[in-house]
Length: 114
Length: 113
Figure 1 (spheres, each protein chain N blue to C red):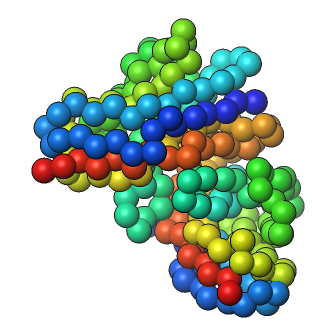
Figure 2 (figure 1 turned 180 degrees about the vertical axis):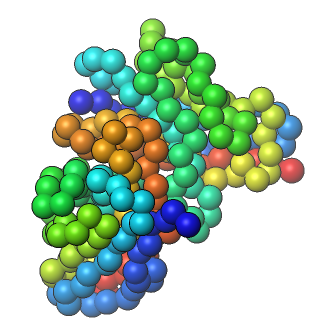
């Protein structure tokens, strides 16, 4: 089954404790990206990657890091989480030619930073 | 670069009535626009897109969207709303970067039985 998986689905942590949210897709997609969803602010892109070792900043990259060492994986790293990073996070993927066509979204990761 | 806006935070409609969820855009060239839906506790699902061609675009689950260049709008429509259409709807398009995407703030659609 074609899918985008994220782990963990729910996470409670404390300020300053480094964490990683994993994202994996099994569709051989070149394009992967991370979003955060906040009430009243909608969906905002954090980082995106066009292929292995090629990443770029989205609208809200501050406080986040990403890496793309393998085509299927695109982890989101919060090296020193703060309460304002409490949010619902989504990973998505698509073919490079299909960016404007169809993005496949993961189920989301709900993060609470205390 | 392109920006989109969804002027309504919430839309309420009675089951069986037509529904419209509004989206406006601002772009310097030809627009690329799409709609996604988010059901409760789920990720986003693609509904439809406009790149070029017919101004009326048909998509999944009986939805369609009308592109209007003079009004810079791309409103999502459905002739007869179902309770199961209740969800959060996002319009979007290309962002500032070459491969960046931007989404509106979302509109919560509630279909009342």
